[in-house]
Image 1 (cartoon, rainbow, N blue to C red):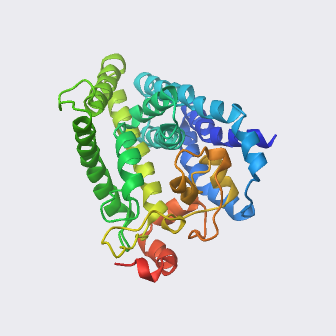
Image 2 (cartoon, rainbow, N blue to C red):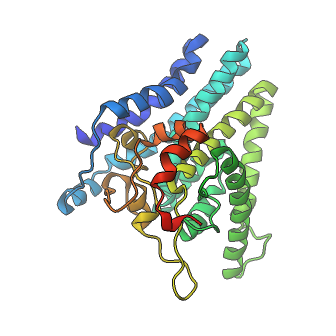
Length: 346
């Protein structure tokens, strides 16, 4: 039964579906569940720092159920998104219901869309990477695949990385700097990849062009088939999705910086350059994203076998709780600043 513990990750789209069906105050079930109930559960359940033995890890890697649990997110995310578009275009909603549904569907896009896309984007097969990119589309963040894989994993915990939050930077400031810098960084990386393969900027191999086309087509289809209200809904829900991603980015490397070596280059990415959390509920709901140091140590390592490294900086709370704390900068700084290693503060 342990193999199916990650079914708990579907609790968020279930809450989103209930909100769409029941409406009324149920439209707020998803944010309340995600950022009130889950943090409370994280405080109740004990922290689990156990790691798998090598034979156990090998066994888990052979079980395709872990892959199918990821694939199932594709129809769930698109199903809830399309149903949400139908509801807002065919139902007279109060303003609080409309806003609540935007946030609810946006959370689904962020957790079960972008987060799963992140995992699949590191896979070696073309089909899995395609699924990952498809999950990024409703959040208008398809460029994340390029910037994250070819930029962030190279520059993490350095000032050159848009997705690394500086010491004493608020999450609200980070949303702007990270979002803008990552987008332009993705274009820069794409251009470099094209040049390395002797391709021109206007080549059909320019994935960034395709991402723009796909995302614009998505919004056009929404406007034509569902109308203006649904267009607004899709636009804002997508924004909620990528803002959640950026909030996770914020807490993953906050204040952590790689030092320079004698040669002037940055030291290699180590297990001390990512914040980790072993709080069980957050680990399960986010497909082990919270064991982030091991992910940076070997990015192709599948989520079900990620390890805890005790030398990694540990968060006092789980990722969902930490995201809430980040929204209150004075409280976040008070809790986290004293945990940032002194030699990393620039």
